[in-house]
Length: 397
Image (cartoon, rainbow, N blue to C red; front, side, top):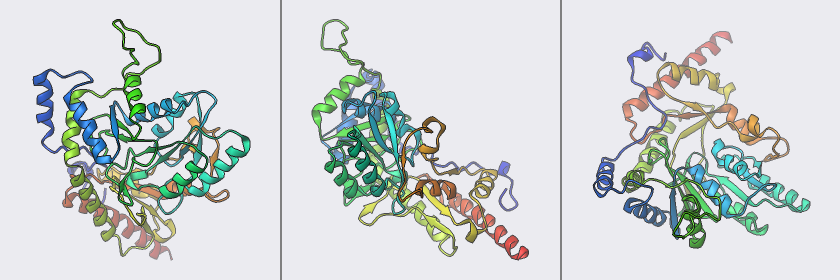
């Protein structure tokens, strides 16, 4: 409970709920009226073309999830048993699971403090070591965390130097830009997610984008059970059931039409939080690199527990008790039991940036439909926690 109001008396404030535009139903109605219900149809064709145009890539393939898109990208790059793939450690597990799907092993790369994303310093060390051993990775998966684009110039330069393909996991950063160019459009492949909590949603789904049209033709083939062009059901390759339905693509078309509005709304939410806590020491929000624009999918911050006299656990407890959904930052993948034996390259020596961020960070409610009244409720709850901690500190001094 924050203040004197119990959680039972207040509606729940969610972290990142879906935000419908009102236009989705018309596209769904069109699909029903035309009977295009299967994983093909006009909505899929249009959604792919419109997303590719937005991202600035030659083509796009709509699939069942962002995870499926990553898996297909690795399949197309020939990743297999015994291979290694470098991956950001500070991310959701779906970024790395497809590496294991292919029978390969992930090597995790630390973050750097300017963007919280993949450290070019750690990546360079990992590539130098791999080159010395005569076994370079089959791919590098860079994740654009919480909407902030990574240091792409440095990362692209390193990948080109060692001739390693780059895959951008832009699941969280659709609508974000780096030097005016859309995230997801820099690598050999880019992937987006349309999960229910993303900046736009198709309920569940993803997109694979690339400038290599021929490889994306193969992606469509693999995503549709790799059925050969024969009169009977013939399969020469192992395929997957990864295509998006025409119904969900209709939702995506309507959502894409309002993407820029959703980015603007989330950036406003972020700015409101920053303004509310600008006078408090010990609170640092996720930075935005010069010449980049984050979609601010989630507003995230880290606490200096000595300055605020507050722990992340205490803050999470108070928000949860007030019926406000907040979450810790992603637990680094190299700390996950699933990947406990995998190699990890830290940003500087033995000092892990992503571990520090994980221990000190929190995600705040950031939905594009969030009202100012609800945001003030979150801010008031947090201020109540900070004020109580300050009073307690003064009394014990």
